[in-house]
Length: 386
Image 1 (cartoon, helix red, strand yellow):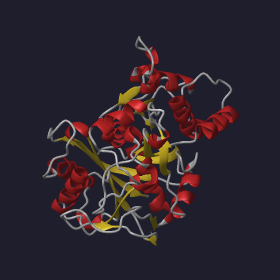
Image 2 (cartoon, rainbow, N blue to C red):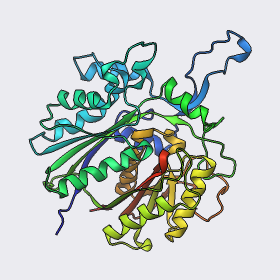
Image 3 (cartoon, rainbow, N blue to C red):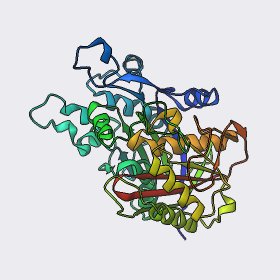
C-alpha cells in the first residue's frame, strides 16, 4: 500500500498580502492585484506616449517588500525574487525541521532572469540550480535541492514530485517553494506572442483579450508523517502530468493532454466526476487556452462542477501560479467558501462550464487543480480535505 501524503502547512507572498490570511481577506473583499504598471522604460521621450511600456500586471510593491524583509532578516544580500522566496518560506522553516530525510523543491520558470539586464557576461546567480541552493542553504537544508522548471505547470508538478519522492521512500517530508517575478524579459517575451491583454484579464469571458503577468512566491510543507496537531491536513490523492507536444506555445485544440492528466489523477485518487467539489483551473484568459480547458473538462464530464480561475486576482504568476492557486483552493475548502472567477460576465468558450460568479458557501472535500503551459505540458492534482 502506498504511503498517504499530506500538505500540513503553507504560506504565500503576493501583491494582495505577505501571508495567507491577508490574501484570503483580500479575496473575500474582491480585491485584485492587477493594475497598470510601467514595466518597460519609455524610450520615446514623447509625453503622448506615456503608456508605452505600460502593462496591466499584478506586482508586489518593492518598497513594502524591502521593508518587510529588513524587519525579518539581517542579511540583505539577496535579489528581489530571493527576498520573496525567503519571506514565503520563513514561517514554515520556523514550524518544521530540516533533516537528512527532507527534500527541498524549487518551482520557477525564469528565476533570477533579471540579473541578465545590462550584463555582458552570464551571472552565476541566473542559474536555477544556484538559486535553489542559495535558498536551501539559508534555511540549513541537508539534502541537494530539486528544481522543477516546466513552464506554467511547474507549481502543480512540484507538489507531485514531492509526493512521488516521498512515496518512493527517498524522503519522509518536503518543502516545496515556488516563485517568479515580473521583468522586462518576461513581459517582452509574452508581448511578442501578442498574448498580453490590454485590460484586466477576463478568463473564459467572451470579451477576454489576453493575460496579465503576475508575480508571487509560495511555499508548502508535505509529509507522510503528520503529527496530528496540525491546524489542517490535505491529502494529495492523485497527480499526473502529460505533454501532448501540440505546439511550442499553442495549446491542443482537442484538450488531449489536459484531459489525460485529469483522467489519470482522478483514477489514482479513485474518484469519479461527481466527487469533485471544486475546480481551480488555469484560466489564462487567452482565446485558445480557455477553449482547450473547456473542451477537456467536458470530455471528463466535469462541466457542472464549480470552477474558477485566480488570474483575475493575481495575474499569471508563471512557476508560482500552480502552487499559489493550490493554496488558495485549500483555503476555500477550509473556510467552505468558493471565490468567484474575477471579471467573468459572459461565457466565451464553446463548451459549458460552471464558472463561479460570486462568493458563495460550499462544502468542499475534493479539489481538482489543473495547469497548462508552453510546449504542450499539462498537469492535474487531486486534493482531499481531511
